Length: 457
Image (cartoon, rainbow, N blue to C red; front, side, top):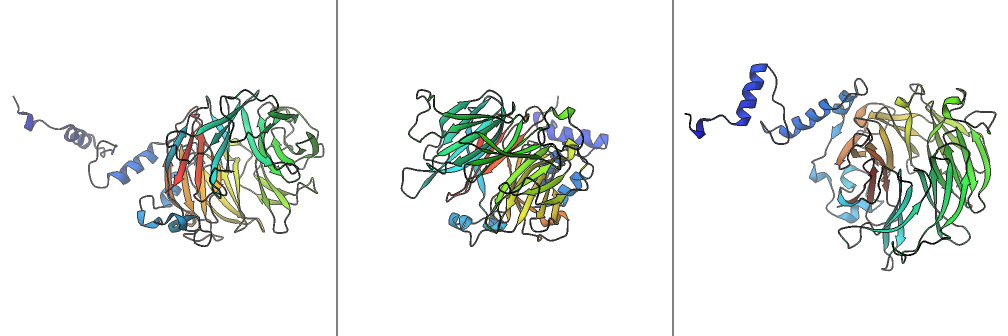
């Protein structure tokens, strides 16, 4: 009988079996055959993931990855938020996991992060508004306060259908905040924003619902608050609508190059000429006017002035590679106003950067292993992206230079965050950044029904 010391270990058995079969050793989190186990483990994970687009993995391998470079991150947190010094990978904040908010019972599809006045003068608390497939809109108070265990659920609004769009705006008359939520049943609800003194278990306020709007446009895919107590929304019937929310009045409605703006019906019954809007973003132009950027199913991105015109100012981007199929549709838009750039995330796993001035493509690269679901601009050169592959990635758009070249070297991934779980082939559905707070705060939400708060170090 062999002594215990002479028996082969499990690692040796795996090595012998793999050598006999002519296969290479496979790195796992427990089996680390050599010093390069970390790189092999990452490569093995990318090889094991289903390839949705031929050649996509080669593009991901070509990207620059500096995930473990601690020297690239600032030691002084004030430097990360100073507009005069931030803008490169070395000046951007590094995010660490914070709280996990688990109150939703289904996928969370939309999140807005806002700054609310705190108890201390001059300080601001970070609040989040989330909408879910469980037909509720919830407000989360004090995401990064002294309580280390859970943020307070401030209020819950119950709708009739899954929430697909959100917007937070202020009344011009009173200055009070209101929440605008869009649903899968084509309705838009206007909610009164609760005060910080309100408790989760206080009696229901019957006056919390200020109004309900019937858009007659199938599902509401996006909402953007405008000036003068108005908001814009895009619907599944192909229309872009402008509403005045205090009176629930439709100001104007139009479709993509369609002569009949009142066309209604399901997506399957519409003629091919009616293009469905898939994403929308709002920004202030250099002349001070508001401008809407709307992406359509055929890949075109049009620029509109919601105040004076129902026709596009111009077609900003015309994607020749888009074929109108869901595999290539645009899922998210973000505006980098400092550099006049438009950031586009698509279902084909790519992120593209276009000039807002002339619509030229500045760069394009494969960013994820699955479709890009959401984008958020942290600063003029730092971009946050989310995907169905459950990853959240922070990108630097300065290293390698943003130019007319379309190579993947023009973007560099500086942090990869993994926390959410997949459900029904969906992963991370939305990312949102704080505004008006000293430290950047990132909030992500996904199909697993959780919101995760990422705080800067």
